[in-house]
Length: 175
Image (cartoon, rainbow, N blue to C red; front, side, top):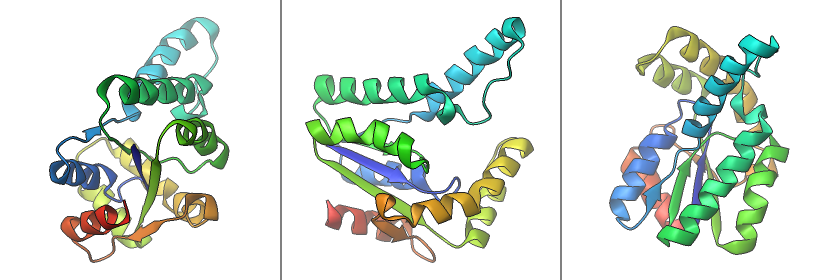
């Protein structure tokens, strides 16, 4: 099975995924962001030759979506454990491109973690990381929240004023 933990950058997807995995020892976390970082780095090197600027968002790279899907399928086939994926995806076409094939082969559960923009901004500012990354994530909040309210991304879970344990308990009750 696949448990996709969606939500704006900084809402707590990775923290919730980690806490969920601790409650469910057979589950494994897979972070597609690592594929994205690798592809962006590769494209930066290629851009030195081609002089074409790579996209700002690695999800706009078709190869990211393809490799993400392939990696999830590989994990489902070889490990036979539930896969927990903490990843923001708010483009409906990209979301369908990755999740539709998965839905044909296994149970897929999707949860969108939500909070007030001010709460998310505070969480982003408290994280370690580069200022440019924080600014980029903050600039995405309104866009992410608006898209995640659409029916495609349904099963919104409000994290506002709730502990990790409370959110994880709700997710487990819905699985």
